[in-house]
Image 1 (cartoon, rainbow, N blue to C red):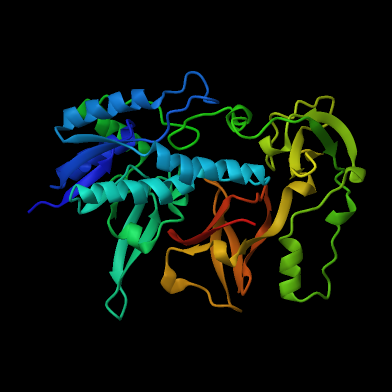
Image 2 (cartoon, rainbow, N blue to C red):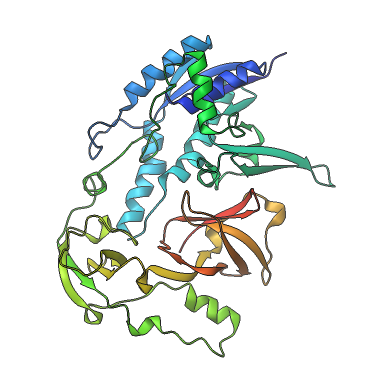
Length: 396
């Protein structure tokens, strides 16, 4: 009897080819389209709304001659993903909704709906791979591996998945390069063959962030304060301090006060800006471009520094609270008082960085070989052993 797979058809080329490949492999394939967002406030004109995506998904299902269904998760998506976004921005943090969308929607709500259709597996068009092996006690361990296309690897977005979620997941295009995927779609005559990749927030699209956030967070004028590159706190002397204390100091974000610099402009709300941001400051007359190096949402202050090399943009370490640590490979979990070298990224598409992870009772410290630009609270750090994603956590 054929195994039944429900594929998340998004109306894009990747999920379209994923469905085709599964059918070629002999699976009984059903396509399902998720409706997760109805609002248009803050979305940029020209971005395709979900109803266009739905039309393309239907065309692909018809071309591949597979059953097609739609399901509406907009209420749950709003509670699990969008409300999370707002709460994080209100706290002055920068969330990654795409990571949450995969954990909470695609591989949870969507999977549950698929199993109600008697699915054996769920599949998506992510550029990543999975394999499995058995440990001595007979338990099966699932590995999440980077996609074969280094320019499209999307394993980072799946960094919060569990062994249970991986167990029934399939990633049919993970071994392919993007041009190969488009070639297959073109040869099949799929409507999505030349369709542009989706951008912006998962299921919402490209957004004007301040306008989007103003649905719940009011704009409020505040000062932009420039911090000089020779700010005293950057000259930290850690000589003689033990490792644990050094890690605590190195992972603590820089703290500023209005007296540490000079006012150079006005912003419309500290909540709307994030560390490393250049656009949106609207401050001219500088020798070098101005970048956000810190925000204070309680006092509605934004601190900025001149140049991409400003020391306020860089940190050697970060901290993840114990409650925010997630191990995909639970069998490789570090015990307190131990450390291990990993490759780490703190944002999608960032090249993997050499680092050492130190485990303490309060959480993990990640000490990088080289200082990292724009470490931002609320984002996810993900650590790898070569091509395998081992775990992740929310940066404090």
